[in-house]
Every structure is written in structure tokens, then in C-alpha cells.
Length: 275
Image (cartoon, rainbow, N blue to C red; front, side):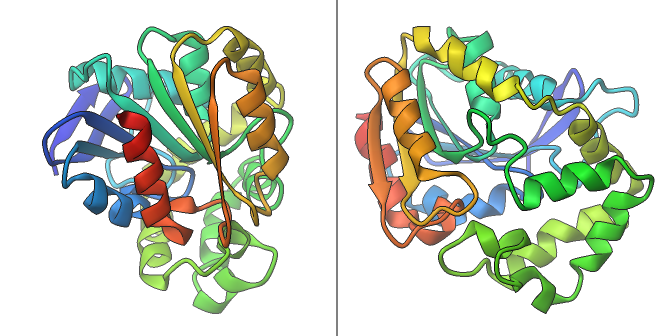
């Protein structure tokens, strides 16, 4: 995988296909593989860039002195787009995390087209269940490591209403969660990146971003799963009302991880929006 050397450290990414650029952004304790079906679909007629961000499932740690937080993570995405010289018509797509909203609020000129697909928003930050659990664990020395060990047995990842289980209407394949958890268990520097991020979370950050997006002049598409138990579906509708001219698509049999539950429908929504 190619690597972009950025101010906080290296970011590995995949870059496939040709045509209009689409940047796919994942959430915490995931890597770019969450997008594999969507990326393969879109790469037929688009240039698809999928970075693995330093969100706990990365294998290239940030610099030890990196000032890492949700806000600097958002700005890092903008820096990554600058480094790859993505054009103005590039489509930024985010699932689960809310960093794209923060980036669009601070650098609206960099994000002229964005797709918010089942993300942190408003007062749901950190999101209930997994988000609040990780944030609490980060406050305790060794807490994130203990959490990673607790999730090692595969059955525990599918306990109803917790962890990865609450994020999908179906199930997250074990091969994905195995890969997502391995760096967290095996690399102290990876854990340090995630702990920094979680300890710098501010509960009002997404409310501030939403307020700024009232003046957003780019194009926006909101995609949400009707069965989302982590990111309230009404938040998708609120975002669509709040962002001027935003479009809304709601999907059935779909939770937070839309790229896993409804990859074809999401790819088609992105493709239509990109046109």
C-alpha cells in the first residue's frame, strides 16, 4: 500500500480506478477494509481512495509527539486530501465517525461534496454503547488494552446490544474484526494513538460542527440506516434539514455500518450523487 507522510505521521491508503475521485473514510476500531465492497463497486468508474486512519486498527503509528484528537484527526483528513492533490469535485464519504463534519465546518473550501453515512452527530457523541465504553476505558491506564483482550473471543463481539454487534443489521464478519483488533492488542504505539484521540473527545464538538454546517455551501448527501441502533435515524433527517440543499436517502435492513449492510445501495447512492 502507498503511504502519505503527513504532519502527524504516515497514513497508508489504497488508490484504485480512474475518473472522479471518491475518498472513503472509516470509523474507530476499523480499517479501510470496511469499504471493500463499496470500493470495488465504485472503482469501475471512479478513482477510489481508501485510507486507513489512526483510529486503533492502523499498523503505522503516528509520531509519538503527535497532537492527536478528534479535531486534529479531521484536519488530518483534509491534509491527506491536499497531499494527494484531490480536485475540488472529489466526493468525501464518511461512515460511523463524525470527522468529516468537523473538517467541512473548519475547511469548507476543501470539502465541496460530502456524503455523511450513518455518523456521529449532534449530542450523540461519543455515541452510545461502543463509543462511551471506549471513551471510559481510555481514562483508565491499560483500559484500552484490557478492552482489546476482552474482545478477543469471537462470541463476545456478537453479544446483542454491545460492541460490533450493535453496529449492523446483519453481522460483522469475524475476519474483519480479527484484523481490526490485532494492531490494538499487539502494538503499544497504536493503543497510544487511540487513547490520545479518546481522551481529547469533547461532548459538544459535534454540536459545534452542526451549527457551522448551517452555512455550508457545498453539496451534501445524507445516507442512514432505518435500523441504526447507534446513530439515531432522526439525526440523519435533522442533518438533511440543517445543511442547505442536502439530499436524504434512508435504507432498510441497515444499521450503522452501511458499507457492510447495504454496500450496493450505498455505492449507487454515492455514484448518483457524484453525477
